[in-house]
Amino acid sequence: MYILYVDESGVEDLRSGTTHFVLLGLVIPGDQWKRLDDILDRIKARYDLSGVEIHTGWMCRRYSEQESIIDFEKLDRTARRAAVEEAIRRRAGVLGVRGDRNKIKSYRRESQTIRPYIHLTREERLGCLEALAKELATWGTVRIFAEAISKPDFVPGSLTPYELAFEQVLTRYQAFLDGMRMRGIVVHDNNTTAAPRLTRLSRKFHRFGTFYRQIENIVETPLFVDSSLTSMIQMADLCAYALRRFIENNETLLWDVVESRVEQQNGVNVGLRHYTGKRPCMCRLCVAHGRR
Image (cartoon, rainbow, N blue to C red; front, top):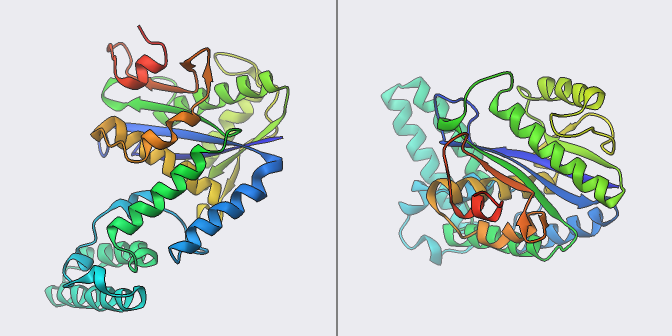
């Protein structure tokens, strides 16, 4: 039995946000899940992140509160946390005096999101992510399947970007399972907007197949879980973020590490497609996918 952990990076809306929408699945052998999960926990513990969700996008950001503290990196982790909490209170107080309710509400959400990581410098946060990525890269039985959609090149039709990406990832997962003569399940980050339509789409695929093949080895519709409680979903998030940032900003710190886990056949990266519609593209991903 295999488990496909799925998460997205970027905004699906064609009119706003990122230039790409990425949906990525990380395939783990079911009988190895506990051992690999324990390894991730040990890495997180080194950074005092035991039981904390690894949210790659937020960990990569610069925190202005930290940058306002003199010699922040010289403080121990307890002192860092206390200093940043004080900086958060000061900034919230300034916003409160100004009376902008929308900005206050937005800042409260932002500060709540970064709180688990404020005891780490940005270099340490990136170091944690790199350590997790390097560990994943050593897992020879793990595979990545992903669809990266260039939104400016996407022509709206019967499927949305999310649905098209889901069909592509599911099709490649089915091909992998068929080749291994194994069954598999899909575990997806609990996206309340996407969950109902992906469940309906999965039922349709189970009955009629995708555009490319019948779905015979995937059991049930996706199981939607809380990413804060599931380390493997967090690793899928790391890989999805790394892929999108590589495409959009040529950032290689994380993607260069995990790219080797993309499913290959005869030297071709069959597990990953960079969708650009009719526009020719000879980027590194497209060349590796065999695009001509």
